[in-house]
Length: 447
Image (tube, rainbow, N blue to C red; front, side, top):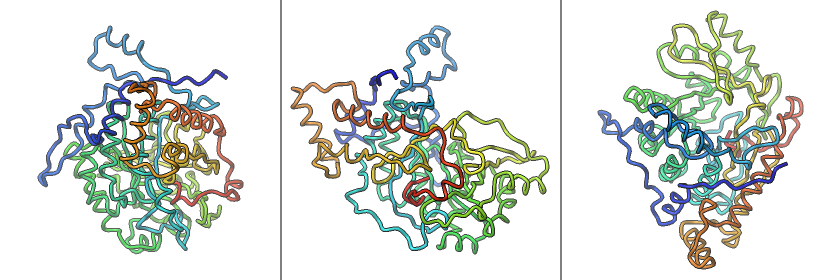
């Protein structure tokens, strides 16, 4: 196996330095649309696409032939650290930013709830931004913030602003997975911060059934969030909206057709997810409805349902009813996995790298990151102190070979990340084995 070689992150070091100087929220100017409610949208996020140094050749629309050739020559190889032994390149990072949630969904959280981890074990905002910068410097182009429920984190908008500043360094998408309960109150600010996509979890269109499946009220608030996204998209916000529905036999299979009907006039992709086993969710094969069975249910009502072209790394098989605006998808992790093209890595809210959703192997990035801070959480003051220590040690000369110039620590982090990625299995365990495996509850993974 060829030795791993550090790629030079270039502009990422500049973004990181601005962050340490207290300028972490500075972003490229955004020309936003204004709604009648005086709220900015992210129409101009599209303007930032096209100048992405890193692993992917920038878009060439409108460029001369000479410029196109130069772009190809200057394109960097994808990071060896994020390439596994089956040559899968992981350019999509999901970061759980909290364990807390304002719902108690049957498939996600045990009925008795979960004991919350001590705050000191959770990643801080500077640590999340640092890890985001590090992964972007290695070729990650999409970051999704998850939970728990990410919108309950108090500094979610400033955090998104700081991560959004990485667009100029290669980040193309900043997405959110949410239950939508409080999204409508923060959505406009999130879009201004650079939000490009929302996966919204909703398992029923019946308010009473919603309360049964989530053990909480809030259906109207979720629908308000969906309507607000659609409203903003009509004004040019261009937020990719997907509604995720976990289908469980005896609970919500009767909602399949009403969800499909949502797409008759609304630009929504509803994705039906096969019920998966996680710690404490009392999974059984009898409760699971396969995607093939769901297809059969839909085709009774809509026999013309047709498969749509997909992309290499899609987790969902996408279909559309002729004449409908929206689409439907199926995430078939249990009966027809998509492990062969998996490009996703996960960081849990307590700082562990998880290379497979269904694997129970984890490695702590938090502990390694905090070694220079005596194992304590790194806040902004600590980041500044560590940086000064490194500058003093190097007589004021910071290396530009790693994100923040902290060569030894970052190289050690990258080696740990690379080793974990290389250990990623070709595919997750089969259905019967998954049922017996110990894994975190979904609430502690982030999906």
